[in-house]
Structure formats: structure tokens, C-alpha cells
Length: 361
Image 1 (spheres, rainbow, N blue to C red):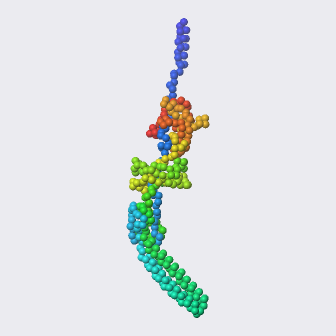
Image 2 (tube, rainbow, N blue to C red):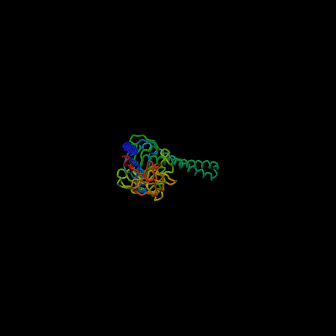
Image 3 (tube, helix red, strand yellow):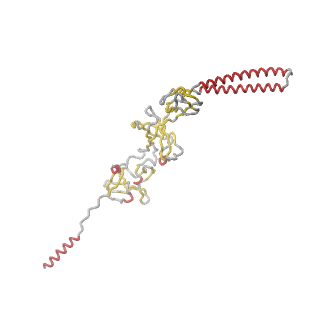
């Protein structure tokens, strides 16, 4: 009897030693997520550019000479026809005087040739000279007349040279550059002054080729100066470069500021926000490209629900951009979407969401 009791006790102890302790469930897997924000059309493309004048002229003298006077400085407001720089006109005045002397000499020669031709014609009418002698005299008269026209033209050129010693503004605007000092000898065509027309101000930006679909000619845009971001200016896309820059592969786009005031200065840094049309490419939510996957041939994202469980959801993808992809249907603002490891998630899998901004911190 005692042996049986010991046998039962040993059997119970053996069975108790075989029981495995209950393992706790694994902790939820961390998942990097992003919160779906505002509509992509509300977060339109914003690029940084430089404020420039639409018209800027480079001016210089038409003749060589020595500068004797400068009337303006950088930043001076000028009007059309205003004197900017003056050359020494001594030589040009002498040339003009010499040209006028040549004109007077040619006029005297022509008058003499005309009188001689009149006399020769009278003699011819009386049969005192031959027709060939009269033809020779007529040819001399024509030569004298041509010579007079030639020296008059040269005199006009010399007279213009005296006016070319004054460099005047060809438009209203502001001086943005001047390289002219008294005593400086300059050549014809040297750029000495730049004048910017302030009546039309624009911003030059470089648009990546992947975003050119959002830029339309005459499309609306909003411009804000970095010096005062609180004030917004309206703008219109005036020009789109027909070819991309070979180095940056971006297109130069010029936006005219239609409501510019005195606070908009040349050379300022400006942010341009384009206003895209409300089409299928922009009326959606912008998410990271890594959040989009494909399940059974359908575009899918993994949404983390209120219980922190992963749920696959079929969406409609629109335009792919450098900063993500536009989801035109299937998401709501404020939802959490997994953006890393989406190919390893399972339906109803518990996760511990880590918001992208928190992970960066």
C-alpha cells in the first residue's frame, strides 16, 4: 500500500514537471506611420525664386571717348532722356566743323559747275561747241552734285557724333549698375550702365521637370517675400522656358507680380505658390511613395485603425511627384498610414504606431 502511494506521488510530480508555463503574447510591432494631412491642392507646389525686372537695358556709348562727367549713381531713379554720362566732345566738335567746311567747299564747287554748264549750254545752242563738249560739262555737274550730297551726309554723321557724347536713359527706371568714372577711356559698345524698368516686376523660379504638369501659362500664383512673409502678392505665369536647363534639368518659369508695391525690391528672395487646377491629379492627399503597395493587382495602403491594428485599404493613386504620390480616393484626413515595411504587414496585426515627426526627434 505504501509503495502504491509513493508511486502515485512520483507520477503526480512527473506530470507537474511536464507542464509548460503560459507565454505572454508578443509586444505589438513598431510601425512608422504618417498622418494624412490636408488636400494636396491646398498644399500646392511652393518654389523659391529671385525678384527681377522684366525689362533691363544695357547701355553704352556709340563712339570711343574719354569720360568727363557722371551724373547718376546706383539706385538713382531716372526718366527717359535723362543725361547719365558725358564724354569729352572736343574732337567730335572739330570733326563736325571740318565736315561743315567740306560742305561749304562742295557747295561752291557745285555752284561753279552749274554756272559753267549754263554757259556751255548757251554756246551749244549757238553752235559754238559740240554736243560731246556739253556732255562732258554735264557729267562734271553731276559729279559735283554727288560730291555735295556725299559731304552733306558725312557732315550729318559728324553732327550725330557730337550728340553721341551724351549717354542718356532710354527708359524710365532705376540704375542697377554703373561702371563709368571721370577720366576713364571707353570704347564703343562697352556696357557702362544698366537700367531696370520697375513698372513690371517678376520672379524667376526653376521648376523640376516632374512638376511641370502643375504649371500653366497665365496660371495664377501667390508670391510672398521672405523679408515679409505675412503679405501676399498675386501673380501670373508669364513665361515658361521651352527647354530644360542642361545642368539642373529644370525649367525656368517667370511669374509677373501683378500687385507689386514699393516693398518688393529687386534681388529679393521670394516664395511662389502655384495654384493648380482642380483636376484628378491635385484633388487628393499627398502621402509618401513608400506607403503605397500593390495587393492582388490593386493599389493599397495600410491604415492603422483606432485599435492600433493594420488594415489594408484599396486606394486610387494619382500623380507621382518627387515628394510623394497623390491619393485621389480612399483616404480621409487624420488617418494614420504605415510608410515603412508595408510588404510585411498582415491584416489585423497589432502595431505600435510611431509618427514620422516623433521618430525624427
